[in-house]
Length: 222
Image 1: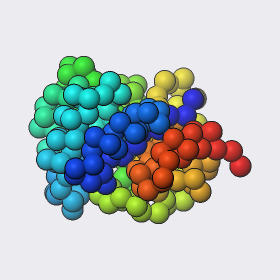
Image 2 (image 1 turned 90 degrees about the vertical axis):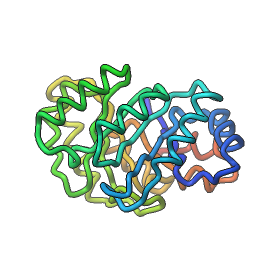
Image 3 (image 1 turned 90 degrees about the horizontal axis):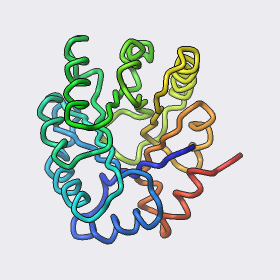
Image 4 (image 1 turned 30 degrees about the vertical axis):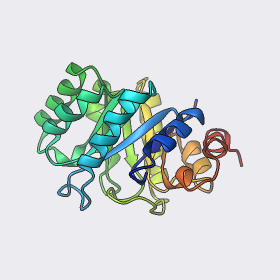
């Protein structure tokens, strides 16, 4: 089953209530919370995403999908666990060693959330293999993290397929999430490659009817 996680990165202040209610009504599966610290990536959305996620927790029962694009993962886990997200994803590249990766995995589980590990376009997919038995989702970035509205790097489709093959071969139960440049033109190729959770922001939020786009992203066929 294909699920849609809608990035709220570009939602304008003052319009949050209207957009969040409309997304819930349109049956998005998750609110995708893009947390950036201005260090790991250039942009800083930390405070905005904390405000938005706190607001969502008050008005909605839909699960939140927190994507930490931060250097200080430990603090990020602590801060965003307060909004009780369904899943917290951190970047493999922000960890110094295996011990730190495993420490972050344990910390997220102790806070009651599922665990995701994200990798940037230049990171080899094999680097995440040893952690797959301990996590719930692998997020493959199909653009450089930090900016919305980028074009999907098509070379990443092979990375998705390679991961899918590895997961099936080792009989693992892991979601494959793809983030970056997902729209009606790219969604089918991403799904064909093996992804089952698509992150989309611009493609949905720029539409006049969120539900039409969300339905098409889920069900779109060639």
